[in-house]
Amino acid sequence: MNVAIIGCGGMGALHAQMAANCGHKIVLCADSVRKAAAALAEKFGAKVSADPLSAVAAKGVDLVAIATPTPTHLPLIEAAAQAGKDIFCEKPFCLNTADCKKAIAAAEKAKVKLFVGHVVRYFHEFEAMRAKAQSGEIGAAGWLKISRGGIFPGAPGSWFRDYAQSGGVTLDCMIHDLDWVRYAFGEPERIFCQTLMRTEPVQLDYSQVTMRMKNGLIATVIGTWAQPSGFRVKAEICCSGGMIQYDSADAPLAVQPRTVAAGPNMIVPMSPVEKSPYQMEWEEFTTWLEGTGTPRVTARDAMAAVAMAEAALKSAKTGQPVAL
Ligand SMILES: NC(=O)c1ccc[n+]([C@@H]2O[C@H](COP(=O)([O-])OP(=O)(O)OC[C@H]3O[C@@H](n4cnc5c(N)ncnc54)[C@H](O)[C@@H]3O)[C@@H](O)[C@H]2O)c1
Image (cartoon, rainbow, N blue to C red; front, side, top):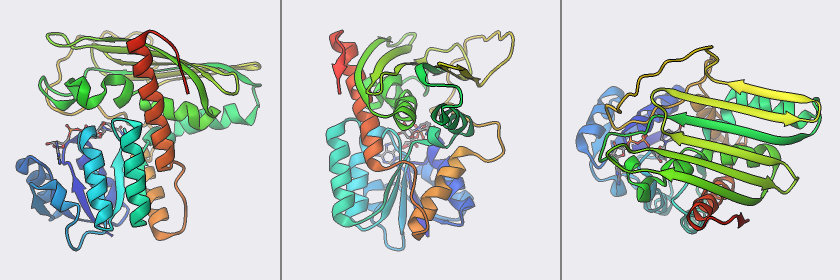
């Protein structure tokens, strides 16, 4: 299929490569910054556009991959759907559930496929944890704790640093784990969240969510954009017959000097196993486009994850738990 990459920053470049690996052709690269579009287009011999809203409707494009700042997802999805294009959109689906509903309605009305890249569902370690927990081999899960943290993404002035645009670590980053907990253990019942959201000169964001799931499980999810350097994910699932544990960096001692982001890009977690989970999500999306498979994540799942992050941010603001 002919693909237009919309947003040619860190994720746009990654998705262009993943799509090309699946046999798709990158025909157009669009970014509000022409230089960014041109740099990526050159790599794939694609055309360049500095007008993303018209690029999503361009002739000769079958599929658009949206990797732009989160507030732009809805208008781009609506324009792409109206033009009859299938859509790959980065997470978070949209800034809030009201926008997610509009995006789903636009895709359904136009009968186009809309996939949202909840890539943690494709991480082998997370799939292995889900399979083990669901198998019941080590009894029933009672409590789980996941933490995911990195340095604050983006250079000063970037959209990541504007909480109104990115939603901070709670919406932008923890949404991965909120989605995964729901994927593995079912619907949440109640969410309580506390955050530390500092702005410049030393911008830090540290957030802790505690959820009771409908099946009784308690889940603690911690997200930080306050790491001194690097990126780390840890998970622990306490079951009646034992514990499942995962740590992306099992070094016995780590000394990490504080680093300042040098560019606009966020650190993208990579799996140490052979095939990239970003590649796996594109392969699964491709089977859906071809009519030979269905993806493990739907747009409604992506909306449910936004609803969880939205409830968490509401709880952090009011100091009260939020029922879902
Ligand atoms: N799945 C993951 O692991 C992961 C990791 C990082 C970011 N993301 C998500 O991917 C999306 C993009 O993040 P990123 O890290 O690539 O950001 P980025 O800042 O590196 O790139 C965004 C690009 O979009 C361009 N842009 C800004 N407004 C635009 C508009 N209206 N139309 C077209 N282009 C526009 C910018 O010039 C920039 O080149 C966000 O939704 C983010 O939350 C996902």
